[in-house]
Length: 472
Ligand code: AMP
Ligand code: ZN
Image (tube, rainbow, N blue to C red; front, side, top):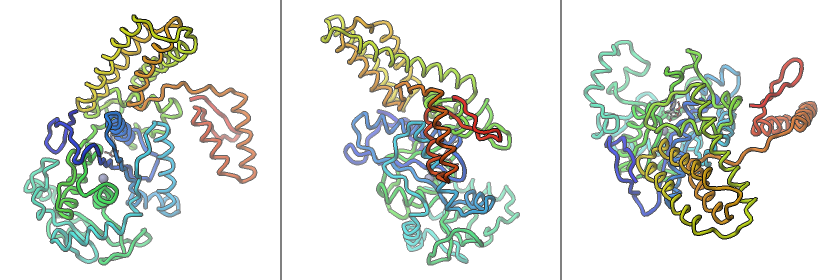
């Protein structure tokens, strides 16, 4: 099995550090809003990497954090007149709902930055002791030039970076710029500003910088040296470069053996941005599509290629997924109708023939997780099933084909069981129960009902005239 390592810019044979154990860390979202469909890409792609590794027999420990202390969260809290904690908790819950909809396997650990402050203070202390960090007026900086390998992931040369800083006219002094020994030094710990969440530390009451969070959480939940570290390609520099500098200086061993990065998702060939008005949250998408369609759409491209999101492409993903779900329906009804138990010789030959689809699937995934080609192998199997499986087939034969089919769709994390249609009458009854719960001020129950309906593809809209609903 080969995977593309950003560190070497080459496809390398995958060999875990220890036996069949895989320690994998994926940088998670900053929780200040509902996640957008760009954030969904690393979630879906690396969840699929994990599923494939598990299918291959590896024992994967998968860690993905939530960054729950950050300027954006604090600003949102000020905007709403509440605390950062309320904001981050709310959006972690919402994010988990979206992840469930996209069938992301729950991580082995989902650490929160705010619960790991002690570990961060320890690592910063170590860095200071080893001469890799220094404190000025309550702020601790990383002494970038001191770390010899700086730039090895992003392939940036430290002198070019320094020159870049000069060219950008850092005469316009960013606050704190004066006190740094070198413009390239980055923050490990910063003192609080009025009203911000803060923790005590030997340097000031304050909070950690973003990069130190991941170094510490990877160390605590995995090891000093891990197998795979992943995230979106925008994180290569400076986030991952700085994580390497911190972890390797503090721990004295290489940080991650393989670095994987997904390319970006664009919308109608443009960068997604709120100000340009082409911005979708996963929740927006769930109003029109089952989130399985979003998952299928993401996997239809290789994770290292940019992917373009458009209504047409989503419609074609919806049709593609429908063919797969229909094939599952057909196989299930063939199995029910089968009167013959044992497979015939001809069917045994067909089962042998069908193995090539799984081989092609594996070959595609072994080649740096080429999910686009893996999906092509699933479609080949669907066509094969459609032409060879019928109500006259034996049960054993249908079971064999269905098992292969389910194995492949499970690796891709696609849910192929058709959701049961909910009747209009049941929807109306649930809406009435929700109204009653609200009247009784049982908002938890009211939210549960809304979520239950959403999971069945029913979107509620509270209007002045009452509650309206539609099928997504
Ligand atoms: P953030 O919350 O901005 O730290 O992002 C969380 C994850 O989503 C990171 O791995 C980012 O690289 C990734 N990400 C953000 N925007 C996009 C995008 N448009 N396409 C693909 N990945 C993205
Ligand atoms: Zn990170």
